[in-house]
Image 1 (cartoon, rainbow, N blue to C red):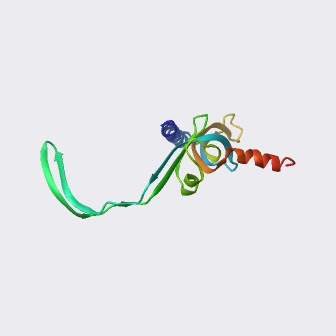
Image 2 (cartoon, one colour):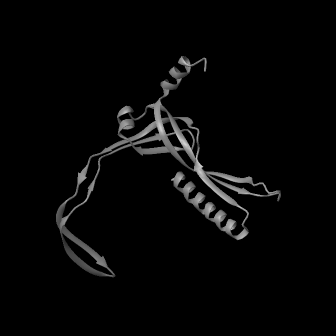
Image 3 (cartoon, helix red, strand yellow):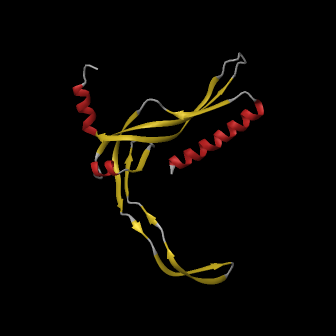
Length: 166
């Protein structure tokens, strides 16, 4: 929910920035993903396997429209969904990741402590504030986080021990 609110706020701010840019001709909006990875500790809080489903069939549909009841026959309607391996990682902060990833689903159990690696998506607004011809950063908004990988928490400790001279 927080990520959804953050995303909607960022879209609103981006729209305002673009409108302002068009009106003044000074502002510039840039977006992109961080080049470097960020790391945080997390806990696997949720796992759910959803098998492939094939909902082909026949049936009776009953509905109402503007107070009038109607019935119809559904014949040979088809809908299918691929299997899904949902896993959710909760970090101590406000960043949580819920992904459909078979590899991570099979790798972890609910309650496991992990280190997540992720990238940030940002929106930067630039403007020539002091009118010297150079645009300065006016605002930088992070509007999305993308999970790249997760490893057991003890993996980072082992890596640091093996690479202490780095």
